[in-house]
Image (cartoon, rainbow, N blue to C red; front, side, top):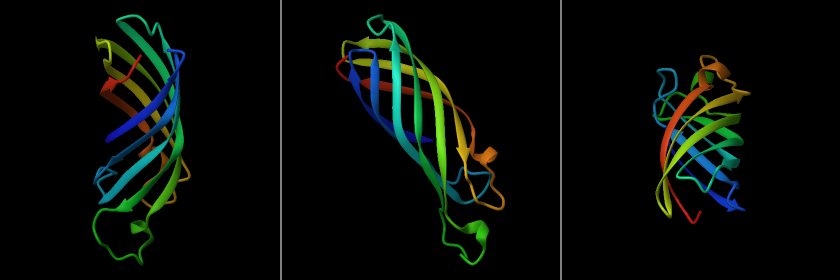
Length: 137
């Protein structure tokens, strides 16, 4: 999945923001695209250290849509929406005064999928991420 997020850093430890992610043709060997996003809140531990970590939570919603034109009379090909809850933890390394390299792990909980061949469990799962973080820390 590819995505991005932005947040407002409060008192060097707490952050609030939003995130959005998406993937094409990656859902259980179907031609469906998945996308989701939501609000994020997190806490950075030892923010002033060169190596620090944070915990965060995303609360939001997502959707499934066809990536190719299909016969829409079949329910399996309909678009769908669902809710998402994704807690995660990241380890960050200061690169410069204004940038960090971060790597982390999260688990995406999906609920309310209404597809014949795709379940909540198919869309839920572990995610590993890497990112470059820019900002005034």
